[in-house]
Image 1 (cartoon, one colour):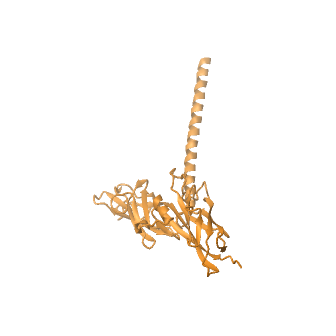
Image 2 (spheres, rainbow, N blue to C red):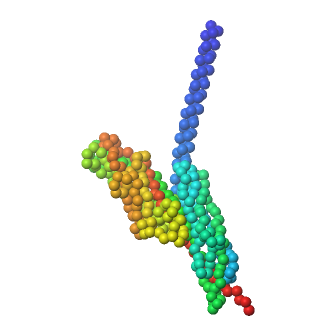
Image 3 (spheres, rainbow, N blue to C red):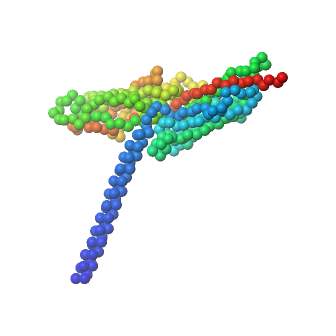
Length: 342
């Protein structure tokens, strides 16, 4: 009898331990799922606006007036107001993003950056806005320059200091879209959603923005499937120019090396519907290269294999990613004064 009681007690202890372990596992899964959803929601809060890198001259750097043959500073505040990391390991994708560049341009007959060749500096480890970095990275970049002697017949000479930023960037949009497997209403069933065009005026945390998505549901030739089509309108909403995003082109844009006409206004477009890659542009590629005209253009993306007509209409997540480079220039006018020697 004592042996049976002892055996029963052991079984009860084992059952309690198993139930406790099961409770901990379920609690962990629930917490993890909740945390993941919260992170996604929080991340979307920072993908707003149409700015990327923003730069400005610091006060008196350079000064408004400078004597000839004098050293003076060029100092800039630099901030990442968008949602893309530059020259850093991305927390969201665990991928390393390329560096950007900051370059000073001057009227070389009268102003030069010293030492020679130091007119360009990298932008690296520069994070965009995110749940881990709500305000984005900020930094100060400094250059040293010297004014040269001006003409003997002049007491002053006006000149200009230019600063150009060149950097890789990305715009991402996640939204929900209706996939209507019965676009002509032939089946007598209630639909949970309606196909409609979507407009976005606030940007997605980058100077290039997706401003409209037009959804179309087209029957395929085999009549058993519906092919979802999406016409994407993409615009340059920033104050600069779109360029190719590879490192060589970015450096060329921030130096005296010339760029080709085909290097401008190029954007790589990829998209997924419910996690499935969409075919974008012309041909069968999952990646399209869009060329902006007057800062705006459209591209078509569709689900090549379509969706079966046998399933009910449903709402599905749609994600669009744009990869590009960006460049813009700011300037400040200065006056070089002659040192009077009498």
